Image (tube, helix red, strand yellow):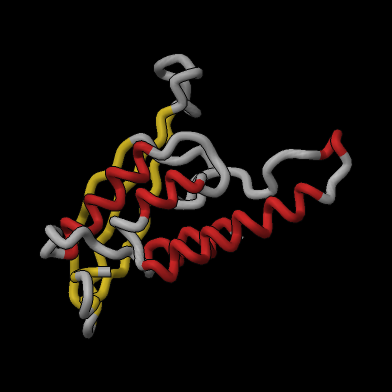
Length: 151
């Protein structure tokens, strides 16, 4: 399910009004993602920040998911309480990402696909440890939205 949410986040990205290009929309999204510390679903305050980056429909899905999680947790015994959704929902790595850089962008019909390279550094591990860094690649699909630009 975490991967589904990450995929939906990419598909439903919405640009700041100032982001006139798909690249600018992707960069704005990843600036927010790289600042997102911790795991689980975003808080109410964080969802307010996402209104600048994502469509209202996607932010509503996050709100609904948070409400569902709260109802499920409320029904658990006290020794089992905690977040149901764990990990970072915005990138395809549990821990999240610490850096992002962009590769090629290509048009496919009404969409633009941007290759994104991501890196996570585990500062708890010593330099030189083979498990200190993890890199992976994602693709962001954006389309021109009538109301807000690229999404």
